[in-house]
Image 1 (cartoon, helix red, strand yellow):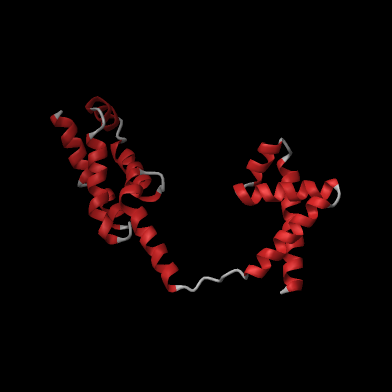
Image 2: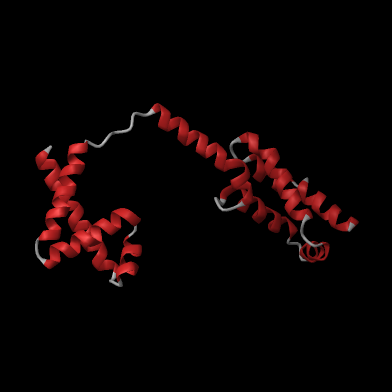
Length: 173
C-alpha cells in the first residue's frame, strides 16, 4: 500500500498535473480539483495503481481523470462544485435581463387557430393533434413514438404548424 501512495504522490506533485490544474478556471476550483483527483486515485485498488505505474501510464491516467472531472458535466466534481456556480450565474443573468413577454392575445389567437384545425378535414385535425401533443412533451421524437409515426413526418408537421401560427400571429399583431 505504501508504494501506491508514493506513486500517487509523485503524480500529485508532477509538473504536468500542476500545469493542467493551473489551466482550469475559475481559479478557486483548482485546489478542490487537485484534492478530488487525489481522492479518486486513492480509491482505486493498489494493485491496479501498481500495474498502471509499471506501464508508465499513471500520469496519463491521472490527466484523464482531471480532464473528466473538470470538463464533463456528468462528473461528480461538476455536480459538487461547478453546477452551483453555473446556476448562480444563470440566475444572476436572468435577474439583470428583462425577458420578453408573450402577448396573451397571441396565445389566444394561436389556440383559436388550433381549435379551428380540429373541426376542418382529417389532415388539419391530424396536424392539430400532433402539435398539441408536441407542446405538451416538447419533443418530436416523443410525439413520433407516442403515435407510432415516422419522426420526419412529425417534424414536418410541427414545422408547418409553427409557420402557420407565426404567420397568423404576426398578421394579427
